[in-house]
Image 1 (cartoon, one colour):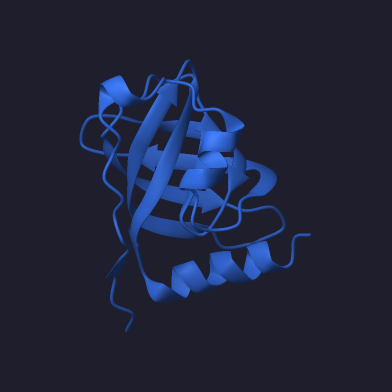
Image 2 (cartoon, helix red, strand yellow):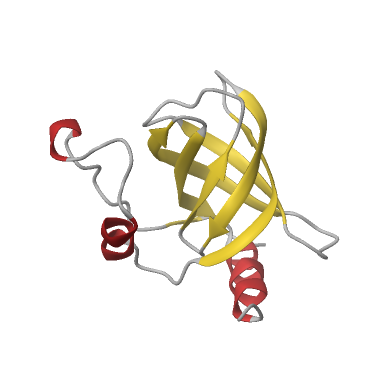
Length: 128
């Protein structure tokens, strides 16, 4: 049976050291994994909130998504990713909201089973 693995958690930037909207250049500097432009559905839930979002780009370490639900920076959520042309969703046990700008937000994938991460990695590896 798989055991959940915690990824390296990057400390958030102090609020006064960054803008709510990160520039594309700054986002590229922060990223540690290749990000792929992709549209798919994401379901999120926590004890406080649940809803659906549309992913606009994704990597094995996180994603950018948009939702009509107001997200809060620092919120931890469980995530179910429904990737295109995949019958089974990818489950992320814990993701943290890293930034919020309007209806867009960034998630950092902090905890998921190795088999789930491997499926996401394989899927993203086939996208050019």
